[in-house]
Image 1 (cartoon, helix red, strand yellow):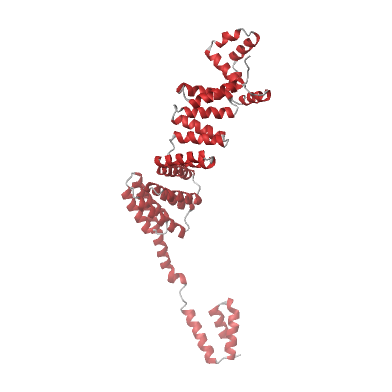
Image 2 (cartoon, one colour; image 1 turned 90 degrees about the vertical axis):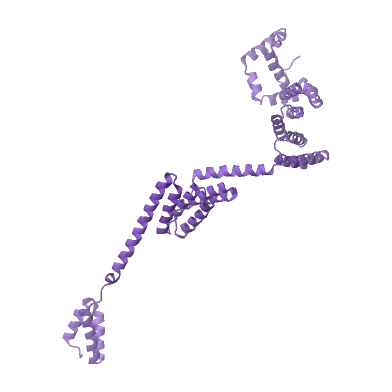
Length: 399
């Protein structure tokens, strides 16, 4: 009640029309407080009105503007150094490029790009250990600052390249895997596959030992004699890891495959043995045996003939040759077995090609209608060989 209208007007002018609630509060204070208290408060407000506090931007604006400008300048200077480094790198001036990249990294230590570039320069200088260390640092900085996945992938891939040069192939493959987890790059995938093959080849080469291979062959022979064919195959296989060019082990394992009726494995080993030693008669004998068991008599006949041309007196080949001749003549075969042999032969593309040969078909028709012409046609070596093949296959029968 002691507050005059003049004082209320002064309050409104000082605080502003939006502070009506505050004015009411002040009015109450002046009503219930002492006159001296109200007067002191009003004088304080008047002083603030006459000398207002400077706004925040006046106090800190200049500082903020200077700080922003400095960061922008540092970033620009870092990129400028990077461009200088790139130019030197393209000219294969790796030491000069490294200096520029180091300056760029010092100006912007939160960017892994400059560290990646430093690693590339170390790689160009063939400083592979330094390259690996720089890549690891780049990855650490990149993860801390949420770098792009492609930049992280690039760092891992470059580290893998350096580790390959250092001979640490296992670590390099692991680094390639991590690179592909960050970003799928077909070139990195190709490098990884090539490196895996290189690692396997080096491991195989390091495992070679002809003396231990012969020990495994002898152990396999002992197991074979005991009838332990599966164990014998394992011993022979271990021997081949130690000496992949040992034709004797292939021959022995082929014979063991026959015991367990693995015709595919036996045939592969016989063919590999012949590749290594084309003059080894035992391989031909065992390959012919595989053909006989597969009802491919025409192939068995061809294989035996090749073997006998190299070793006419080989006992094992001669024994298999007698079995082949008996099979060609159909000794002991029923009508159903003969038909089954012919059907099996028709699965051979070579037999199908002979049956579709127009010249041979005319010859066979002539021989069927004019048996006397058979002797004339058989005087032609090429025709005779084709007819013998069909006879051996059970396609045609000679009476």
